[in-house]
Amino acid sequence: MTDTPKPVSLANDPLAPYFIAPGWQVGGLLFLSGQASIGPDGSIVGIGDFDAQLAQTFANIETVLAAAGSDLSRVVKVTIYLTDMGNFPKILEARQRYFTAPYPADTTVEVKGLALPELMVEIDVIATAPAA
Image 1 (cartoon, rainbow, N blue to C red):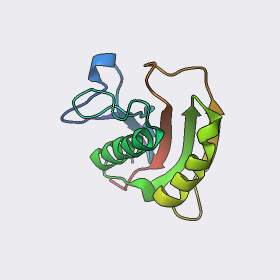
Image 2: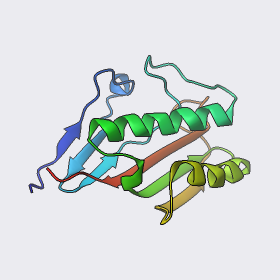
Image 3: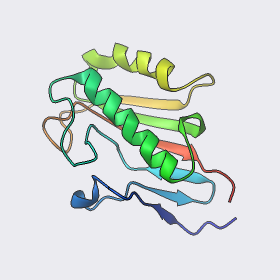
């Protein structure tokens, strides 16, 4: 196994205009960039709708993990950025929907804003990579 960093690439990368890599594999770990409710065409999905934004955010996480040969079952750490902590109960529901016990380590914080003003949630993850 090598520790040489290897970028995760997507055929249609909605983050490319922002000069952000979707993620990096370093040894047996994957480090994903923060994922938000940006659709494959680069548009924001679910403006004003937290549930729609959360679903698109997890779909994006799944896409990047799949591009690296991984999946949600391999996520060991999540960091969740919310613009309104009032949505925290929906995060608890999402943890049960997208993960199983033992659940990933987690940090959830409220922030004043995200990269684009319409975004309500952003999530970055660390996952294990499959053996090469």
